[in-house]
Each structure stands twice: as structure tokens, then as C-alpha cells.
Length: 130
Image (cartoon, one colour):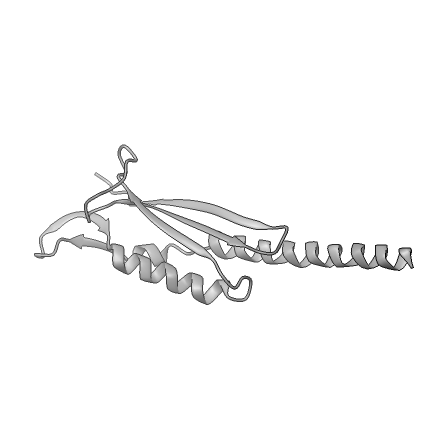
């Protein structure tokens, strides 16, 4: 009887680790392969009056695109995730308080199961050739 309980416990841990590792790999692959088209389509080159300026991220558009991408691609791996988007200045990496930000940090956190927790962040910059 003790052997049956022991082997049941070992088998359940093995299954939990196996499926948890597969889900963790899927979440990591989904987040790291977020294609640059999401970010490129949220870049503007003119201000609100139509005058050309340095390119910057349209914050509302970027947040909608990233949320939509993560909602569509992470639902098969996790039921809940937390994505955060921080805008900062490219030159000195301080927090950007204006709406003309040229750098963004996207972070993702989620619980896969009892053993695995995913937490990663990526930085994206707008590089202009001068």
C-alpha cells in the first residue's frame, strides 16, 4: 500500500513537471517571438498637427496591439497573465513622462502551475539614422 501511494505521488509530480515545462516553454516562445510588426505599426512620424518629428510610440495603439497579441497566443498555455508596459527615454533610460517616447519595456508575468512561475521583460528602441 505504501508503494502504491509513493508511486502515485511520484507519477503525479512527474506529470506536473512535464506539462509545466511544456507550458513554460510555450509561454517563453510566445513572448520572445513577439514579432516587430506589432511595434512598427505603432510608431508615428508626425505630431498631432501633422508636422514631422522624431519617430515615437503611439502609446494607446501599442498597448492595444500587445494586449491583443498576448490574449490570442497565451490562452492555450495559461488562464491569467500580467503584462506591463513602461515607456522610457532612450538616451538616459529614465521614465518618459511625455507622449513622445522612443523606448518601451514590455514585461510579462504568469503562473504556469504550482512549480513554475514565468517572469521576463524585453526592451524595444526606435533607432533613427542621422
